[in-house]
Length: 349
Image (cartoon, rainbow, N blue to C red; front, side, top):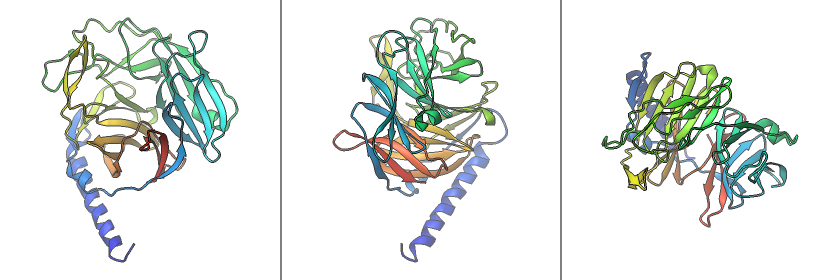
């Protein structure tokens, strides 16, 4: 780096932070349910990070997370759905959750992260596995906590997490299309079960919207925050963890223009098919979100009140899972190489 580059970088960063500060003062005040918008140009002015590939994974892997020198992977239709790999040698340290249709076996495994817990959701057999990631990474052969679910018919939430002595899920019927033609008139973003995992009957809805009412759920109970990152719209919603009251809604900086319609009774994206927030991770005083803008990938970091802290560009890429190093200074993303091989890529934040 030459002597002129460094001052220019400092100047660019200063301008970026000033823009963020103005947005926060305008949009994220102490009032509840405050809406703010991030402008497109914050993406144009951010620096591009170069990552290094630290691991090449089998093609069956659909999610992978870094934890204490290990990589925890989740696959579909393998004998063991979850594996713990040593990041240096590639050796399998542990295997968890057997594929199958009886006992504690799983027929499907959709991964989600809740704080320090990996959740593997099997809607077919109505069960979920909770895996302590630190214990799994230690190689102590810890077993997952299997919890049974009691879901109403045609009720298929894409995310379920612990909520006190109950469970909380994304409401698959909470959806309204931008043009208003598809509207279930159900504004409950989250639904809570009883202590046995039994979810209440959601009532009658005109549209089956489980395919499009999807996104990432991040939680920070110690900060009284629950966050929803929308998969098909550039929206971040921030709620109180205790009351489930919506506090903030943040739109932008992209301009998602999906068109929704019905296909065989299910609502789906029928034109454009743009994705917004691909993944997210909670860590300490901030949340980290992967935002797609066309074929470009950005990493946004915000505090738990929605105040933006930083934005980084990862180039032309997409990701399927995020994780952070122990100190939060390194980001690990699951991407795909040009030959279709899943790879773990590390970026210095």
